[in-house]
Picture 1 (tube, rainbow, N blue to C red):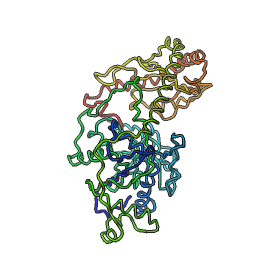
Picture 2 (cartoon, helix red, strand yellow):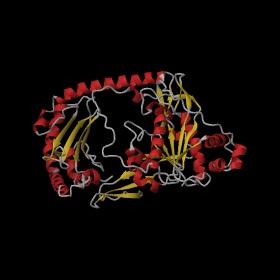
Picture 3 (cartoon, rainbow, N blue to C red):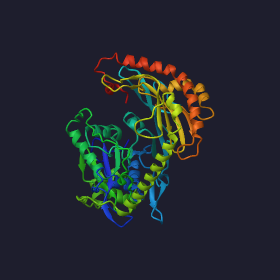
Picture 4 (spheres, rainbow, N blue to C red):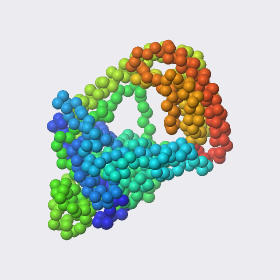
Length: 512
């Protein structure tokens, strides 16, 4: 773990890196200031997270922090794996981060098994999940492909970092994702997630891009802690209605490219309080310029003699309060991407409307189309039941047919995924289900929606759809027979569930 002996602090350390920058169209802004029409700071977050200049600054700091933490220390990276550069025509080219991070990179894979399924060999167990009645609901585990490498990209669902983070033992977590800064209000449940999934113990260090939104998240979190970590009221998170017909928001596709920057440590939290980051930034800049100096960065920051002799700290200038305009060149690129997405969506809708004309034989067998949306059908395998008292009834299990751009799939799903081990059910019948899918594939796998059938060819391809629908109609009878016992398991699990006392509401009993 990281060495805080020279900082005099207790609790996690949060370091924000950002500052003034000039982007590719010549306009200037500060990563810490708000951007007009961008309440979640996506524009500045995307610009920093994919910036070569930002990563050079971040790696110069993190490398020295790892040196201070010992030979076995490593950084876990959540989010971006590439940087972007401008081509001559103004478009963007991506380059992998692997070539930029000294000391070698690898992957750390985080997985969750289903129910009492054991972890694969060579995976380390981090946590066992249990339901309200103690039933094992799966195991969270992880595996590092090259444990000697100090930069490790997270592969898998970062949701389970709250269960595995301390066991993984990363000295530093670098978060360039927008998982905890994207849409909605910053409320207690967001701060609780931030603490559980990003702050891995008192000695942990978190490094993030410094945007207006990330600072709001951190400041809100600190206030939440000072207030005693109040629990959010039920359903306190703001719910935003989604309109599938609305055009894409260009802001979500906007990524400015910094060509000049004064990036540095612009935010520092230690001991649950904001600190002046100037000494840490001065130490980082000195050690980046004088790579021959073999002084620990915390020694340099925490020792008054070394600090006065070697560091020339400059007080951090505040960020501009006024909102910056979206950089023009990045906005034009975003508009092109939005236009391309709109054209592809229109093409997909035309093709899917034509394909839907052949769905009749499936509808005769009970397959249903949703009121909105194209290229999707579902086949109820049971009657409709409420998941809990007062809930709208729905099938306990169903098949789902989806036509994608280049492939088509049929999956099976149950709303009782925390009570019925659907992955084990289909795996135990692999031979039968593979025979049904022939000559196409039956991937199955540990998935809450196992794929029973996958075939190449989707709405963008020239497919004999009458023949494909006829084949799916024939398979429907066989899938129903193969999944008969699954439906029985679902009915028994549902009946048992409704025998519970009312206070065991499913929202409070589902495994996390």
